[in-house]
Length: 96
Image (cartoon, rainbow, N blue to C red; front, top):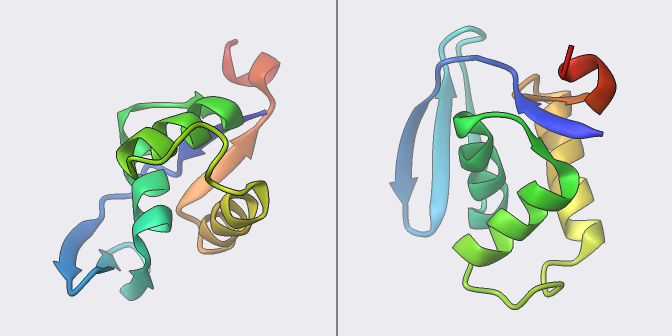
C-alpha cells in the first residue's frame, strides 16, 4: 500500500504548535497537530509507501526510528483519508 495526496490545493497556517489547513475545494478548515501536518506535507512531494511516509515523518519530528507509534501514525493517516486529503492505493495499481 502507498499513500498519496488527494491532489487538493491547501492553504497552511501554523499557530502555537497547531496547523490550520484550509481546504478550498470543500471550504473546510482543519486543525492538525504537528505529526498529522507533517504526514500531509510529506505527501505533497509525491506518493510514498506507508513505511516511507512514517520514516519521513519521524525524521521531520527529530524522532528515533520506530519512535512514532504505529497506532498514532495509523490514526492520523486514517483521519486524513476520511477528510479526503490523502488516499490509500495499491502499489501495483499506482505504478501502472
